[in-house]
View 1 (tube, rainbow, N blue to C red):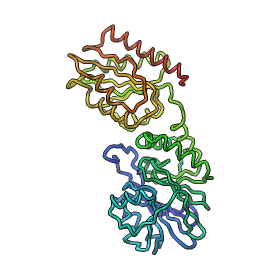
View 2: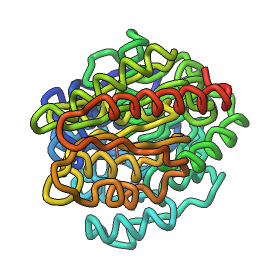
View 3: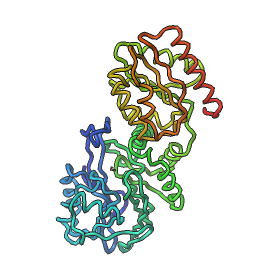
Length: 394
Ligand code: FEO
């Protein structure tokens, strides 16, 4: 993508990665992503805000050349992760005058990760400003967007916030600004769910801090920019602050159909009682969809057969992931089948210590579920419906 003007002397100079399908060897990217980088040219000095993934550094360099940039004074590193910092070595080699501005922690991480020379850095304190002449950049420390070193950059005169990952969406699009709110909402929610949800209490603080800023544009480092910032601020507020909803998330796996029968029965029993369910077959599901469902759910029920004397590895993965993502869940349970014993319930329960949940009576059937098992599933559905009602979940 060629450079695009956002405002006079402010350009988007990053790269669109249409074909990437996996991030961190973990996170599915069904819609690709972008690595946004922004150039701010003041009357006296020029700053580049974040770089791009090293696989696309030639796009960034070409964009700077097309704009005729002969000198960079500053490269702002809001975040040390390589999809934004990985082109720093080439950028500072091309622009030998450029100083990298980062939080003290980010500086140390960049030296470790990219072996950058210490003398190229200037550290930024919280709320510190630098002048580019007729433009002023303010640095806002925001640790734990999902790494400990992160900061946000605010361009005061144009009221543009550059928050790097925060408010971003993994979405490859030529739209400079959000055009399709539904599409961006889903992509941004997926991104929040996959990496920021565990740091919800830090995100709360960042949202509070940002209330002091009169923001006209949010320019994240993934996905399109927001020229109506309230759209994404409202979405984040809901994901972070709202009570969970009257929803059960049901990730399950089944080997010979017994667990599947129990899952289908429980889904029906919950639906009859007015509880919404989101069911995921772990053998084929997109893990990002599961993460997104966990943002709003009040209860998780994991369905698994017993294999190798414990939960199926797919179910263990779902439990591990749910524990790591630390959603706002209030209740959890386990259903499934076994043939001759095992420690399925104990092992799964031990895998979710970070969830502040009440564990509801599990239901395990010996072989195919029978009348007593279906009755136990009805009881579980009734308990969940009652618990949700007592918490006033809607
Ligand atoms: Fe987009 Fe945490 O990097």
